[in-house]
Length: 254
Ligand code: NAD
Ligand code: ZN
Image (cartoon, rainbow, N blue to C red; front, side, top):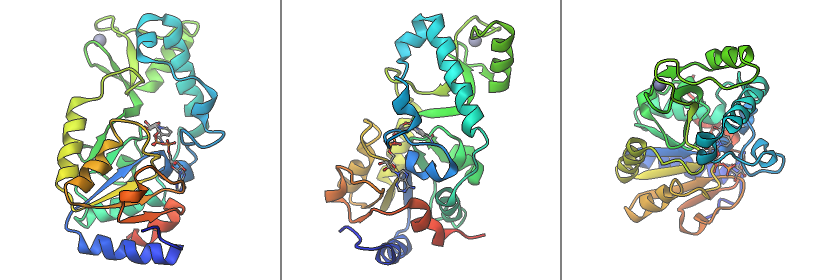
């Protein structure tokens, strides 16, 4: 059913969460827009302005690597100090209360960790943009280090001092393989919940969008909270087309 108004939506959500033993939230960019980080598809979203750099281009072109890092630092200047929003804090409260074992996220902004989830309980399907890794040896490099090296080298992105590999934010680009472990853990979590909450995702990016479907087929209830419709609304037990922070705020425990 589509909740006709905010109060009905909140009421149903409270009941469904109370009735569930294990709740697994699945989050997308919409949970972070109130933190000042634009989402992907809304008009004016930062990602609509630049064509994404596919993985094979990053691997074959120094200029693509330079451009990818220039964009990353432009983003850092715009919203590098974003703080968790009401949605993040509500989920962290449910996590502390033992209702939510893990959160599965398409986001790369680290805000679930910042809101109080232990890092091992955040399953990141598209990685994390707040640090970087050598694509060959896996060594970790902080963004500030990359920035200093680039500034000192006329804007040329640095390679790994240990092995010469390319250094990239720890995110999954278009054309890059999905992370096996995260995908498997997300599947396990999905198959072991009795309430799946899809929050702030247009549910258009596959294979990530397969999880709500998987949860539902496995017998879990499905709630979708998103201000736009999604192609899974018809199969959801509850559809809430309202602002995420407003809907989830009642679950925040200080
Ligand atoms: P998306 O942009 O495709 O969808 C976001 C959805 O959230 C939209 O349908 C939008 O209507 C809705 N929304 C936005 N603000 C809302 C609010 N306050 N209340 C209710 N609904 C709201 O995002 P996606 O499906 O997550 O896919 C984009 C991909 O790009 C992700 O997989 C991610 O890797 C990346 N991305 C990440 C971030 C981030 O980490 N914060 C931001 C943008 C994009
Ligand atoms: Zn290396």
